[in-house]
Image (cartoon, rainbow, N blue to C red; front, top):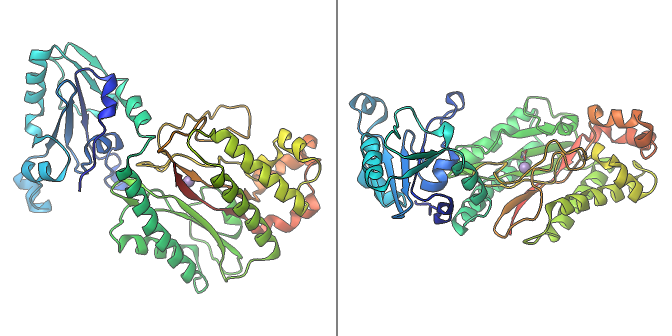
Length: 410
Ligand code: GLY
Ligand code: MN
């Protein structure tokens, strides 16, 4: 299978660019570098890629046969096989990278572009007139925001597998005893369809554990709990899915959990309906807060004037994270321009700011949580507590958290 490499990234680079692949984190197993994969579609480790901008020529360099290694791992892919599999103009072995670079620079007096931390010590750029190590990375990050049909198809495929795995967890939940059993159901469903990598660590959170946004212990009993929050998604060919569902473990909501679920579902549906190319994501996030405020006012958890509550940012106590993020080769994909130093609590964790370009893929993941650590400071602040009815709130702590997440491609 091949991935089209984007020619659009060449605008910033006059002459030649090089990327390499390596093992990023041995303890987590092998994960292909995303910058490398984006331009090559090649999942092999210890490979290199050179793009000669002037001639629009992409050359892949893959490890040669190492007899000692063959004993353990079998024969590696040959350059001929790699050239047929990947969408590259030529394929050689890594022994040829340095001679290739030297010969290219001789005639061209070229500039070489590379990503600072992603070129191995084996590579020499000595013969290059100029070296530019800061432009390439942001150029690729910018390009990655807009997806090709092929990339969207991979994300969809990952989502189809993850959706089925979610359904399998829902079916297994009533008879399960512990969060980890359900994590295993999810992983089995993905792995048996050859989706062996997860896009992120699964969150399998029963009851009040659902109030911890990135809960990953997944080891508590689910007996005597009402809701399970499952946030889990596999990868397909390095492209991520990201799905959250919250459902009653035994099939029946409580009055309180159903009320919160309905508000979050309404937040998600209305926000998805408002999406279109060019829309400002900050305003969709605001819409989600406004719907949350209305719902929490209707339940009596919040009290007072909706506009005043919005201005005071009281709803952040219940919906503390951003509405979503770009999705692609990384779960929290590049190019979002987040401002984690934003003094406005409503926007601090919004991972995407500004207008959404056509062909971007974004998650829509509203939530309402009852997390004591987050809400209690609001109860101690008179400017906030005047909008919260503590007596009504008392009935909702056991709901934990509700989040509903899916992705939209525009
Ligand atoms: N699904 C995990 C996250 O979006 O952070
Ligand atoms: Mn997400």
